[in-house]
Length: 78
Image (cartoon, rainbow, N blue to C red; front, side, top):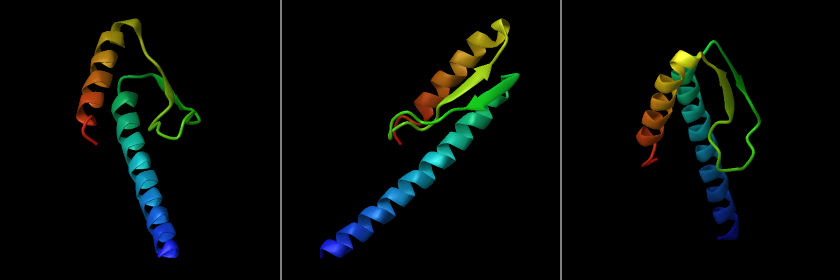
């Protein structure tokens, strides 16, 4: 039973990592459309999905912020 639990934990962890990579890609693509440049950074804590920096114009800031809020709301239940 112990080995089965370990195997199940590995499967769950793998699925969570796959989902995190999927979400990070989706989020990055949506925000990159509004940026001149972007850079991915190392995740700081285990439950982070994305850690990135985006270079945007001042005129784009409001739209960029609105997009980040819309994205956050879209993933709220996940």
